[in-house]
Image (cartoon, rainbow, N blue to C red):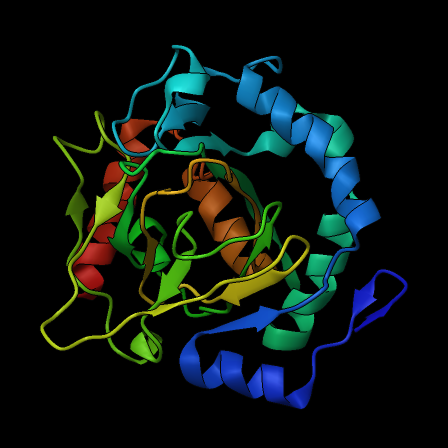
Length: 271
């Protein structure tokens, strides 16, 4: 439920986020509000907005610097950097209120991201992973990653799937999807026998919110007519973001390899 630019999280939604590691919040943005985001999102997908280096890439293959319309899993990191007019938009305003209700005061936007799958791209699979595998370890592990659907999502077009409660266990070992981190940024892990992920179908304007430890992924887009566009705002504590930036870690895929090696080393030391 919305009051101005504040979405009111219910006690049941809050409890679900704590126990399962994620929650589905319906109707966070209106159709009119989502329509204001469509033109910019599609300009990114056409390549009309200049994006530096690997920050526009195919998350399946790691390809970048080529025609983005051919990408299986279209990805833009930190789009607000490349289109500053988006900074402070309605999604940022509303999602920040959600992050503070779910995680407490002192949350700030860590990074934003676009992820899209064109119709008929069955290869647009986002492998199983935990976000914490990419990020530094800090004492304050509060995270609210808000995933906005710009299209209705379903198992057919590659909706998000979560392994409920998996945030309560340690981070699993992850490895690059192919080659090393310098060639392929994507990290992956595996489900264990008997684990049953839950697909979450949501409508345009809905969001899911998940924390850094819950296992999640998504299948390819089997639909012949439906895109699956997502706009992500990830919130962490002000102190955690400060520590990241002091290391030079910005979540850009252009971050220095030495920085990524440092992050990987910190994670390994915590295993």
